[in-house]
Length: 194
Image (cartoon, rainbow, N blue to C red; front, side, top):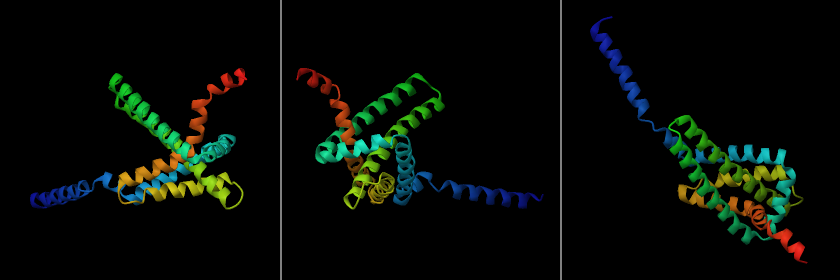
């Protein structure tokens, strides 16, 4: 090949590579539509799994969360804080004890699954309650309504506002089961006292 032609091919390939590198992958993930689509898909997957596997628990969660929605929201925010604290602690311990990036990625994935699982439950509960307001409770329709609500929260232009709305919606749905779980140890003692 002619040296001049070879240099032009190398320049063309090099300039193409630099234009590809100019696209930042986080810019695509950080875009509100991408966040909304991701939220919708993850809520549908995890909420659908919960409905398929633990339908009775989801129904109980709707009843307990909607019994006292304001109190449920406080307990739900508390649940988020606990999951965040223990998730960061777990991830920190695993990465400190293991220099293997695969193990660290697995720990990060485990924390993410826990967070998205809570979101799937919370938004499914909120959606099921909304279906109950217009007719009878339909948890599978509620899953779709909850996923749409969660996706809508991520369409806000500011990521902080999206996160705040997301946490509030999920907290309403997970607060009832959290409250029951926290106070479960008191119930047998109270029954034995009477």
